[in-house]
Image (cartoon, rainbow, N blue to C red; front, side, top):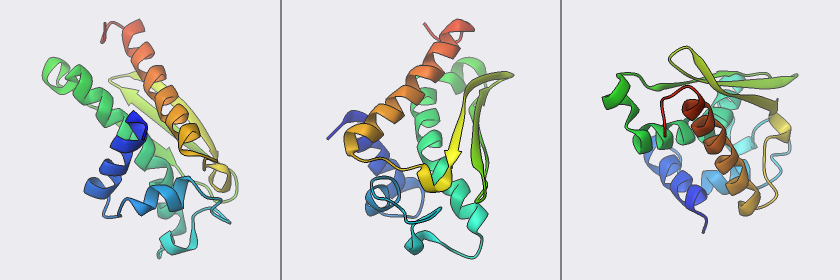
Length: 140
């Protein structure tokens, strides 16, 4: 199993209230809509927000711990999701006043055909954040 996906499964299990099957059901299968039916609650926009928040928050937490940002800079990485079930959900990740990642997709398109594809996505988000922090002098 891949480095990021393995840790992401653990994050989902320990931090979200879902079990590890959530990764397979939410991210590694066609959801047949914005969010797989078994994860739809009373607030669809919140469900979409969670779908995008979990992987990006996971990477943000990973970077925070790896770089010890809280101890060194007394700041944490902020993850903001603007959910939409009609259009593109926007993801914005910031540190201090710096946008370290921005992206998004339509909720029904935000899933991956394989664990390797999910791994590449998580790694790309990680690299983007690290490179932006390096560019601004917060990482070596």
